[in-house]
View 1 (cartoon, rainbow, N blue to C red):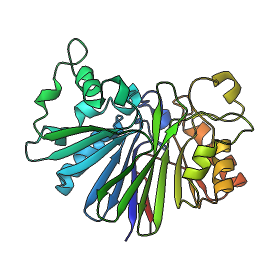
View 2 (cartoon, rainbow, N blue to C red):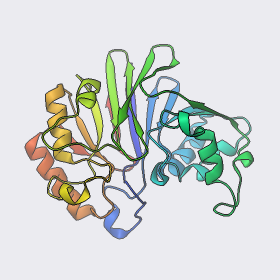
View 3 (cartoon, rainbow, N blue to C red):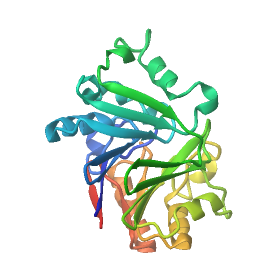
Amino acid sequence: MAIDVKFWGVRGSIACPSPDHVVYGGNTSCVEMRIGDQTLIFDAGTGIRNLGKDLIRRKVTEASIYLTHTHWDHINGFPFFVPAYNPAARFHVLAGHLTAQGGVERVFSAQMADPTFPVPLSAMKSKLTFEDFPVGSVLIPADGIVIRTAPLRHPNGATAYRVEYAGKSVCYVTDTEHVPDQPDEVILDFIQNADLVIYDSTYTDEEFPAKVGWGHSTWQEGIRLCRAANAKRLALFHHDPDHNDAAMTVIEQKARAQWSNTFAARDEMVVVIE
């Protein structure tokens, strides 16, 4: 009766594989949630490559992939998601921000097309299906699992997801920009009483004024929202690639000093909600 959460990619903007990004990781956004025999994948950044290897090891051949949006750092790992090339596998890709722009399949096909990629989407021989839903929809991937959705403040649009199962809830809230001193009422309502909130903590409050309009938030705003919404734990997520291990250690220490129920997400970290 648990939700197993595993972080496969926690960076924003661009992958940063370097000796200075080993502790927290350099892969871009990808989070896996396992509920019984159901595998739910959130975003397809570079972290989905290692997730794909793990699915093969575990002999998992079916999953749903929920996209917050389709900026490169959230989809550019998908061409390297090896299970999608397996004819015996099934993957369902969903997005809530592209209904009026031609749909998510068009974006994925364009990403894997000449002259930017040598292997077309059609080379993926798994049963690959795509679904566009209006943001705000409630999704039911399996009996007992409810996924609620909400709009986020991000250039070109983005979608938040709240996974509910057996009285537990995990919220995936990235990429979004807050307005200083004006708590986002949509997010506050969305994360109310959540067991875990994974929140866009790209910047610090000190860095934020120079980044207004970029579509991201801060770890301090994440704490403010979680406290106001009575959420139980906060995972700092979508780390700025310029925040190396030393910088991230300081950020995590400051965040935990402010609210002890906070931690910085790391590549391959597992959190069990039970």
